[in-house]
Length: 239
Image (tube, rainbow, N blue to C red; front, side, top):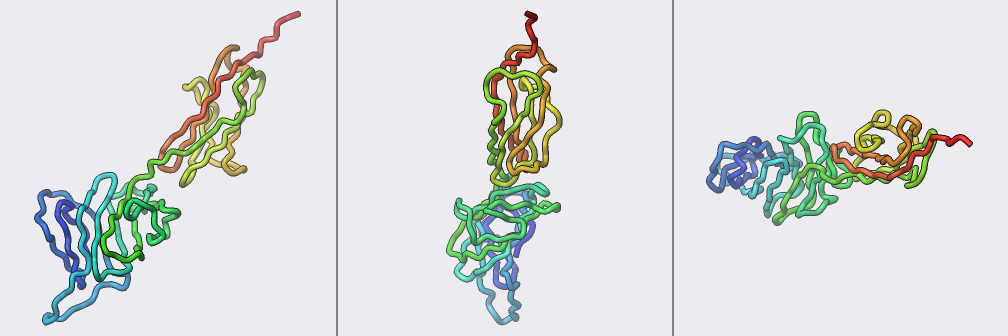
């Protein structure tokens, strides 16, 4: 059902798992892609004509993997896709939309995590005429809001609180002073869902205008930032 193939050529897979290029190839590139029926291929004797099972065309094999499959015979198909970044999240779509016809133990809501070997095994149950499959790195950033403190005057020890969420998962939140100085370490776990909290002694900086930011990072290393402007006032004027 294919393995390392030249992505510049169209591929015809037969019912016994053998395949050939149905168009000329023009490179020495390779794409790690296999397609097999869920029940395995059929064995044919020498006198039987092997039927066409699946045609694959339009292979694109960069950071985003894409191919178009067509068939009048294929039903449930297992696709094994390689050349992915190990243990990374990918958005899997069929005809540009997430599909309940794509299943994998590593998938949830259209987002799938590649294995440590850089491969992703997908079971497609949607049937065929012609469909385009796309596997793209997760590029959706998390969302984050610095909820406390709000813009205004602060003093003493301040509680910093942010809420953060992501289409897959938030990996951590880092609080930052004046865009350059980390406040503590990145917070990678929280006892309250989507809420990240730490404390900061405002007396550690000079009085006056400052910014406080919180930066959310998701499991694909996409980032988002929320910032508030504050005025630090800790000096007590003698009376």
